[in-house]
Amino acid sequence: MSTEAESERIAKRLARAGVASRRVAETMIAEGRVAVNGRVIDSPALNVTAGDRITVDGKPLAEAEATRLWRYHKPAGLVTTDRDEKGRDTVFDHLPADMPRVLSIGRLDLASEGLLLLTNDGELKRRLELPSTGWLRKYRVRAKGEPDPSTLDPLRRGVTVDGERFQPMSVTIDRQQGANVWLTIGLREGKNREIRRALDSVGLSVNRLIRLSYGPFQLGDLAPGAVEEVRPKILRDQLGVATEGSGRSVPGDWPGSAAGKPARPGAADAKGRPGRTGPAGAAKDRGPARSGRPPAGGPSGGQKKPPRR
Image (cartoon, rainbow, N blue to C red; front, top):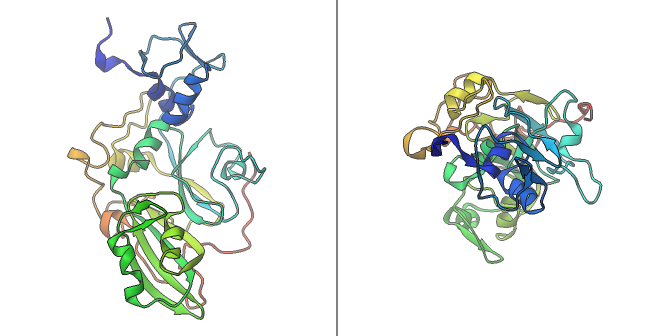
C-alpha cells in the first residue's frame, strides 16, 4: 500500500508535469479531460502515485522534467496569456522555438514591460505567486503629474480602490521631467493593474511601467525580447528546488529557509553573481537617465524580436 508521502493530489501532479497551473489543472479535471487508470475523473481531490496511469485529452502524461526557470524581458505590446481572444500577440508567440512549454510567474499587462519569470513547473509557478512568499517586486514608473512627497503618502499607508485594498508600497520620487515624474515603487503582492490603479487614485496617470526585479531575480542588462535561463545552481541555492532527474521538489516551507521566510537579501542574482540588493533581494536602483529613459537594463528601441514559436 502506498504511503501518504508517495502520493499527491492529481492537480498538483499535473502542475508539476508542466501541463498547467494547479488552478487551470482543476478546471481541466472538471471538464472531464483527465483520466486515471482509464477512468475519467471529475474531482481534483483524488490522490495519485507514481504507478498510476494518467492521460490528458487522451494522451499519456509525460514524466515531470527537471524544474527550470527563465528570465524574460517582456516588451510592451504583448499579452501574458497562452491565447488571446482578441488575436493580439502573446509573450509565448515570441519565445525561441527551442524552448519547452512554459508558464509565466505572475503577469505584466499589455502596456507594461520588464522582467517576467517563466518556468516549466506549474507547482513552482503557484508558490512563487503566493502573497505569503513576501518577495519584493520592484518597478520603475513614469507618470503624468507633479506630485509633492505628501501626495504619495496614501500609497505608503495602503489604499482602497474600487473596494479593493492594496497593501502599503514603498514609493520614491526619482526626478521630475517636464510634465512627467519618474518613481521607483516596490510592492509584495501583484493584484491586477495595482500600480496603475493606485497611482490614478492620487491623481497620477501611468504612461510607462517597467518591472526591474522579482525577489532576488533581476532584469539587469537583459535586452528587450531576450530570454535567459537561470542556472540550476541558483535554483537549488535560492529556491531549494531539485533540478536533476524527474522528481521536482519544492519544500513545503519554501521560499527561503525554515518557516517560509523570504530568500535572504544580498543573495546571488539570476546569473549567480553576488546580489546587489536592498530589502528582499530587490535590484539596485540606478535612477532614471537624464534623457528620461529608464536606467541601464531598461527597455530600448530597435531590438529585433526572437523567433516565433
